[in-house]
Length: 122
Image 1 (cartoon, helix red, strand yellow):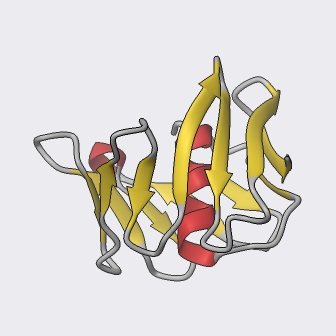
Image 2: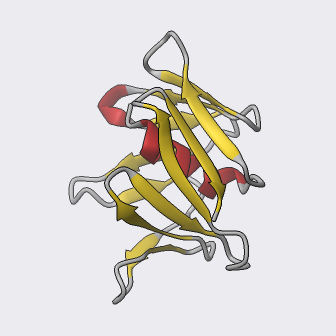
């Protein structure tokens, strides 16, 4: 499981307040987040969240959310989602997530490589 992707998708499907984090469990196909949302990875990398939303990539490597959420890249390099969230890589393994209000952006980064992702206010 790519924990960074899973954490950002968790933000998109559960809209938590910062600070927010997700961490791997001893089962490397399961993670739990600070808002008690759990994420499990199934066949083909399909992620299932405890709120019954699933996320997978289609043959074109596009994201497919079971709740109808869609995404597209804008001309500034942001990945924009249909729920008005946006995200982009800042540098290395640091990502910026911008919620609809555009006032409480978060930086998400690994705090324990590959095992814990923490998202804090910018």
